[in-house]
Length: 392
Ligand code: SF4
Image (tube, rainbow, N blue to C red; front, side, top):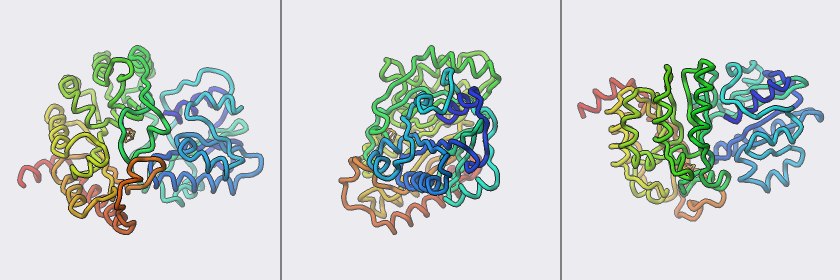
């Protein structure tokens, strides 16, 4: 979403995209600080650009990372310009020109030349790079680690940022420190953005929010009141929902059911994080594995074509082999279309830092690999998976 905003804004102000950041005058890096692996890769990229950029190139970094590690930016990256999370700051940094900082879609499909692709793949990450040149701005946007297939941006999708901040307090998560509590846009504004997307011919919409399941809590609304309005709009479209905390959606299932029945919700990403109730409790994720399984099955019963995405963390502190086996088993017990697996990483100032004992790195790594392999293999076509599950 921030990438879309920056792109629209810069192109409107006369910049041109360049595929190779080495050729750009300004490099923008929207970096993620959500978990250890991304932090490591984000810092590697910043160091690499800093080492190899020419003295006239400007590197501007934004996203959660500078907020989580202000001391590193202050001490090590003295010549890197750090921007706040919100987009309009770019204007103050002298990069953009005039005009409103709006943008819900990517102007052209993501593309990068071979040289840049090779450079990005050196980090074993799946990155997308975009650049602009008037004199030139290059945009390097971190997407996902280890060749995960989830794209951060897709030119056929209209992105709508509904809110920022979060209502959850998951023990391992640093995001509330960087983004604060939930702040939502009013439904009328979101409806107008949605209508704009339809008028522009978009058929796929993605609702975004750090904690989309909490949308509207600060306005006396909720995600379902927003969705009920959107699915009523005339037109042929489908909506993707990202970052929906299972607890919040479980509590709204009565309202969500009629929305699902419209067939307008294409996918929901609702991370489970562990297959062990003991670990979920330590993670401060207020639901049980049994509730999660029921919740997913209920949605799939109402709308069988719903695509369901989830996440699992391997090696949370105190995780025993028995807990880990439960996460593995969960993958056989629930029909998930896509599961992202993360290795637990210690983030600064989070409650899980104090939870002992920690899982040794080698064990954590092994569990991550095993879980990831199973998650990949489990991408069995849904119909086949249903047959297998019904026979066990
Ligand atoms: S709900 Fe999401 S963003 Fe909020 S603390 Fe939990 S994991 Fe982090």
